[in-house]
Image (cartoon, rainbow, N blue to C red; front, side, top):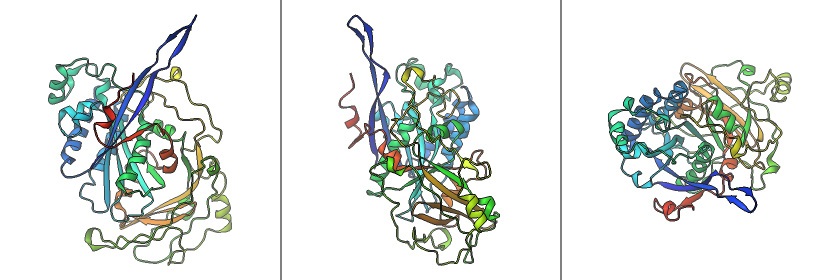
Length: 423
């Protein structure tokens, strides 16, 4: 099963030349696909990541592109993890290549990333978006250094990419992924998106739907999490702001615990969201609670990618910067979002307690008050909270991303998006 979509994006705004004369605008149809990662397509995506890593050495900002590709391959490595359900979402220039899984599909991919959620907990409220990167092939000037198969494919059409790439599509790809995932999950709508973005991608996500995340791990002493019982620290309530700006926003849904089993026969039961823990959790002291619930802008309470509290108008197409090979590079095209979209949608508190045999992530956000362990959800720690990451995790509200870019057309099949081309 695959989910398709498209969006007609403005490349050149129409403009008045005076005396009744006008310059026509230019539209570009951007095509999107989301497909599950399976043993049938894993080799293609693994080969694609390897080929793009080789191509990244030929473009500016090599290290940023390689870091993004590493995040992408981290998702691919979960192919045999029973607790993880991984998808690949991408933009392509030609939907006819989607089923080929060969070099033709490779050269037509404009941007891609992985989307991962729980395979064992049907009501798990979070997903990760990891490893988003723009194909370095779009910026390669000399074909001589390309992998042989790709070089041979492009040598016959040296102008293959001329006029094709659309700028500023990474946020649109995130929005399409948020909506397409609902189809795969049978209508269920996760509320949290967690990622560990490079700085420039983090700044972009910080413009819409960003949840100000306060890391209170230091206040909890970074104590080792319990494995089979015992007490854990408790996070104090986090203030929430900004939810009146989205009329359709609803409280975090409650979920029921599941009792499935992962590797080694370990139970992967998840706690009931919003319900009191069966284990007594000592609260933070009054001093800690007061400090940790203070403004996230304070230096003593680390914030992650906190956006401005004042909405700023989006940049016009004339103010957009030139694009580069990576959606997270310093020179990537500046994207814009509707100015009425909420930039900050609330505050979240979290703590990551690491131990030699297990780690745990505690989150308190609106009605969500949970502790997720590495034994139960190893994919979450392998992706968003991997100790090898250079950058910290960030949180976004998926409900905001699903409501942005409503002009994305969710197509019923691969041919729907190509029936009517923009003029």
